[in-house]
Length: 182
Image (cartoon, one colour):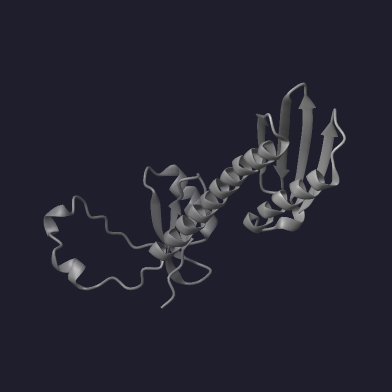
């Protein structure tokens, strides 16, 4: 992580520079790709107020924090604490997104359906039955037919693969194709 310090209205001691640099290096352990991260720290003195402002930016995020106290060391610690909370929160959100994505993909790969799920099936639930003999058509024509129909899917015989396929509407407006291989 690259750290840049700006000092306004005072000349910092070497001890203060080292202290601030060591404290802000602590953020490095929370960052996934710390090579692309940049931290801009502005330390200022206005009368009796000691002000610290920190802006942490990367390819994936931008975080900022500001703190004001009567002691510069305490101000540095306080602004670091604020940034740490933000970085941890951001990291937890990214973990949650990855977990949800993994759970969603594992839910789609459930494998074969157990036979006992069909034993409770009642024939009364079938409202309508359509029977037809699908004619061989290309996928593009099947999509056109689906666009013209009120249904969310269309079963057709794919003339390219010589198999029964299903084309369906996705939530985002695109179309999906199911091509079972046996």
